[in-house]
Image (cartoon, rainbow, N blue to C red; front, top):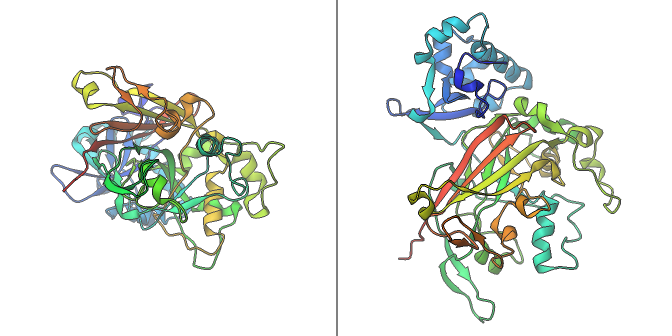
Length: 428
């Protein structure tokens, strides 16, 4: 399909008419958040399109009168599909209303450069998993060379509850955290700025309709509870993490900030890129029944790649392009996104609309597929060299991390960017 919005047809565009992700934006002239759809280099102002009669005023379209995506997320799959079909009809070149819409494009479209993107929904709860076996193995080998995976890894999706209040939208600067660390040969810890600040490249999902407390979500129904997907950077202070993570797991090393991309790529757009889940090897134990289904085996995975680049302050001052660090295949994840949803609710935990569930660092076995500096530099032992001659074991003040995600082998559908610049720690 082609659109009458020319930029959406460019081979470089992530926001084609086959994508149509949702987001929330404001402009210089309108500070009240509105819901929009990304198309090419523009944003379709959905409420304006409804007011002008280009989209129907059916009941499900009242969700667009809200200031975030929560009401839209609560709609049924059939209602969301109906909305998507209407938006495609509006934007598709050659459709019955294309000529009239094109003639009023200045009223319907907001240039992305004129918009300020917001968090798409008020996130009540955030859970981060550890679903990449390659990441778990790469990290485990640093501490347990002969036995990198803990005994439970292949049986249970490992996760922790993060801090929803510190989730920020792409472009928000990240303040270097301070905390307790202990040097390898020291007897006591000290308090100060983290010296081992890291990123983690992840894919996240937003829960659409939740479940009642005490009920569960079967694996066969898990997809019905997924509204859409985004990029997630789970910033991590590795030195603080090393000192505090036993016996209860991550805490201050991770809860200071998590960055998400502003656009939510819908489950309907991702459906074309569903692939078989990672095939278990002969050494893997059988998956427990509640996490096993034929549908998950044949279509549980997602053909996506997460790409991470870095730009130091000096690189930007010298006009140098960001350096790509990794290109990680999401299809290699040991646990699928539906399995994460099912496991999360398996004890009766009530998931709610707008909850964010992240995959954990997405990595492959090769050095160019490692989704964090901890893996890529082997905990700082093998620094990355930048084009300026600078080296990075971990992130320095002024560094900007840029994450992108693309779907499919041709990589024509994307998630936009998830980026953040590191600011110095507050020391007083």
